Image (cartoon, rainbow, N blue to C red):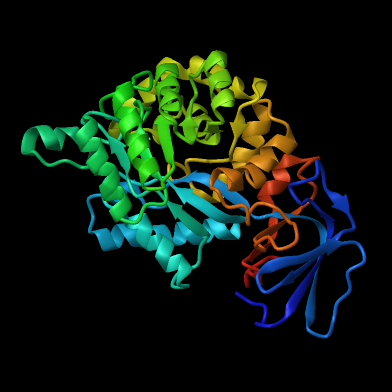
Length: 408
């Protein structure tokens, strides 16, 4: 990081979008002081204790928030915990330098390692976005989070945070809380990478989902759910989850139920195009992913249509990528993917700033307004005119400090 302590920063981009207005303001400047936005305006001047940073050709925006990441390399899940934790270090740095200043990590199958990553970032031991952690995905045996069912059948060794029945699930939620959870995540159904249940399945009963959400609520924790099928989404919304992850096969009627309940959708669409676009690339797939390839082929058209559906609704959409299933440097591609699916540039950009902050209950994030945390990103161009500008990050500020490797 750079920016000497005790000094202000005056940022002079071509335009500023504060995530409150419906578009950017030309010629505005932003004053940053003590890690927060001190002022926004056209007539700001630099004082004796102010450093000025010009950002020609850039739009200054709130730092991007990704509400669905997987920082840990799942392929290293059977490696020592210390090694698997270290696989997240380059991922964190890459995400930060591509403008993502806050991420919600929705867990791995087995150990709550992302809680340690959160603390390491907070303590300045490693460079990365602010981490909000759901330690592990709760899943029934055979569900989406049951990563090695063959090992369980043959040797009785489970890889996953597995629980079923209301009492077991209450205990599992309490264990996640004890591990340091900010959120609870559970698998309401299967997915394309599931070892047993497919993407059309539903994993838990209504009573089981209610037990998860109610126990989490007692502990002050919100719930996110992995849900693809319409029935899985509907049950999770009825149980009171705060966010539905994916939701590709939800119907328009179910999206209406989500609107009425105030449930957020985190659509994670680029990850699906990443795999769909490679269906005919034999070199991309191997014996370990053959079942996943078959699932994509079986549901390809239904999936493509499902990705276009939420833009036709008023559901509240928060940005999330599912990065970890594809390279971190490509996270920005979620922006143009959402626009291609019918979302406006404004709705898309808000989803990664103000709306994402609202989902995470962090009102200090996601806007460029006085007293907001100065997490900022400057991109080359105007993303309202060309959404691919989100992939051209030139400067990143985290808590008011300019990253040392920000590009001129």
